[in-house]
Image (tube, rainbow, N blue to C red; front, side):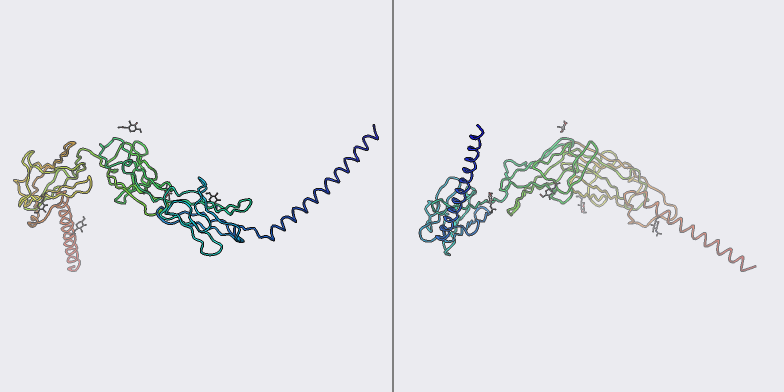
Length: 392
Ligand SMILES: *[C@@H]1O[C@H](CO)[C@@H](O)[C@H](O)[C@H]1NC(C)=O
Ligand SMILES: *[C@@H]1O[C@H](CO)[C@@H](O)[C@H](O)[C@H]1NC(C)=O
Ligand SMILES: *[C@@H]1O[C@H](CO)[C@@H](O)[C@H](O)[C@H]1NC(C)=O
Ligand SMILES: *[C@@H]1O[C@H](CO)[C@@H](O)[C@H](O)[C@H]1NC(C)=O
Ligand SMILES: *[C@@H]1O[C@H](CO)[C@@H](O)[C@H](O)[C@H]1NC(C)=O
């Protein structure tokens, strides 16, 4: 038994030795083989093929550089996706008039694809017909500039204040365009955060621009701008109208004004859509623009200022005046009462204008007047004291 085991172990050692010798012999053989091949200079690629990104409609040129081609081998371009052979050596073999091949310098084969289409996107293989085929691959991305899909983008919207509204905008393009919203007037976009909380942003990113419980400040023209890495960016203008009934604020409701002056009344209106505005007197008689009354208004968005100038105010002009504003959603009116104030210390000159707060202007005049007379009195007292002192 023991002898048998020893014999087996020795056999194992010898086997192992033999194996080692065989392995080293084979390795020598492969090295020799490799050296032989090198002597024949089999063709090989000189550089990897550069990937390309080219806008649609332009021309893409993929360059394959081969060295040691010799006369035995040929270079072919093949579309990777479906293995279609496009060119062989310097001949185009596909029936696609947009494809060309140029073999200007000895080492380069250029595959040219003109008037690029999106379907040309993909990888292209440069092949050398060696025994074991050699291949190199270059990929082509076809960029498409952004385009807004009008049928999938909101149009102008008119929504009542307090309701919800969403503006949306979709665009095609490759890579997928980014959508950014801006206000056309350059102001910031007001977004409601909570019942009474708002945030303001210059731009908003995203396909959908949500407005929860619309506020009149959110009215305006919005621009949806779609852009990717391919110029030009495109935009669409979407008007968002917020409808609400008129609201009127009157800065001064009780106005005293001196006789023979012009007095100006003012009302501030907020409303949308457009309003019809007018002035009445004594709860009925409509006032017309003319020599007695000058009516002006200034409108900017949903804000309207209304002015009425009454020329040469007299006692007969005393009474109630109303500014009235109506639109399709409602009507509002502001009321002012005008009365004549008797100015004791000399009446102001005719043609003086008492602004809005008719009361404020003459009153201010009065204060100046009184402070002037107070100054006069001080001077008078000073003179008397001086005289007394001097005369002593
Ligand atoms: C070319 O693009 C392909 C696929 O997008 C990628 O696998 C390859 O590494 C790129 N080659 C180079 C040289 O960047
Ligand atoms: C507006 O949207 C909020 C939540 O998104 C909803 O609770 C509310 O009922 C909507 N209001 C209207 C008027 O549709
Ligand atoms: C919006 O997109 C622009 C451009 O892609 C980016 O610079 C900006 O940081 C984004 N803003 C937000 C709030 O995500
Ligand atoms: C009233 O007339 C003046 C010129 O006298 C004019 O400037 C103004 O626009 C008119 N107002 C209205 C409401 O027509
Ligand atoms: C009248 O008083 C106001 C403020 O009280 C002042 O601003 C103005 O300069 C004064 N006018 C004159 C003429 O003193």
